[in-house]
Length: 301
Image (cartoon, rainbow, N blue to C red; front, side):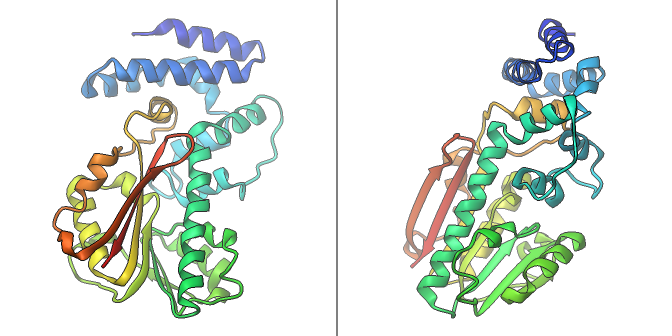
């Protein structure tokens, strides 16, 4: 097996009580190996390296263990994201506590928290501008935790706020937490939107945060086209995607069996193909401070 040395060194760090050093070595080591391998070779490497003792140690972390066990049947579920946001607070001591702090404080989770703040900003902006007449759609809404950061939604109710997700458990949590804000639930697979079976009209804001990380190019392009044409004049489509080459990707794939579809800015722009330039008022792209996530904002003319 390749790169055995850094695995043994990380194992030694764990035994010496140096959790941060061990995790940093694993993350950087897997990143280097991943960058040096073809995709098929990397997947074979991942299946082999997971049997190493050092990887068994990382599974003492509730965050990592949740990702591997997939209690809701898929990676990156809303409860896992709640660990990143701090809604899940397991009682831990010793190495599991250190592992958990290291994982939730890592670069990618920091970016997820930043993304949540950005979503709350967009919600506040449209609520302020539309003054109670806002129509908002959250696609793949998860637990919709961005509403807890909204400063406006407690004073200005949207005309319509649709929370769409395929997971009934996620929607039940949204209803429990946010039904008083006028949020409506819609249990849907995005295929219903892509196929045209369901449509919404005159949206002032349509957004998807983590969803695009799991969509093929074809599905992402089709969804983008559908959502854009649901916007009212002046409406905004906002989507996000983890960037190609993020440093945590190797560790996520090895330790957590968490595989995303990564895109750069050029690939994000390519998702707008099929939308006439004359229909677009403006396009903005930017990144989070850790350079892990790319954001795309498109306004309809």
